Image 1 (cartoon, rainbow, N blue to C red):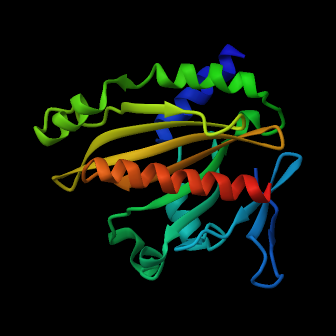
Image 2 (image 1 turned 90 degrees about the vertical axis):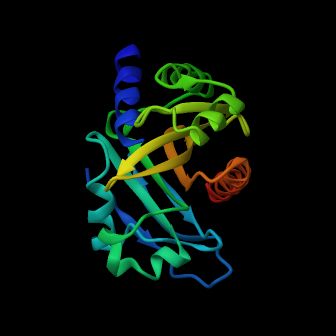
Length: 226
């Protein structure tokens, strides 16, 4: 178990088999757009208002895969409507307000119990710098947060099938510094451990509130169809 947990931690930190995909051809009242196979289960991908699930599009899949850690497999990739409308310019865009659903190959054929999620999350949290909100937000405004290091702002449990961490990191892209807030989630879907990462550019504390609210709605939508 420790070896598996260590592998998961390495993959999560780096990320920040072929899958059988089934398109949903039913009417617009259906709550999911398509389903994807993972191990012995099929995961339905929900319709999310204001977002487009687009990992089935080869160019978008190739773009997303180049940033994924080895040993992980992206299952779904959701862009907001505005970004999706400009998908032909993927390589020249600054992404915001998007999320991915993914899993670790090592656990593809295994199962996870709710109590094991706590052990996994405790290990993952040990790789983050833990500070209170005021210290982090002050650090961001004063530019003394270290680039590339994740700062844990909060962790919580929406229900017994989920665990969530909210973090902020500072990145330098093309000589421009960006503050990114991330909701990292572990989900139990039919006893499989599935990861969800939702990203937003950090502006102020309102960004965090919006991130959490939408992240929770995304989780609820995924669990509702699975």
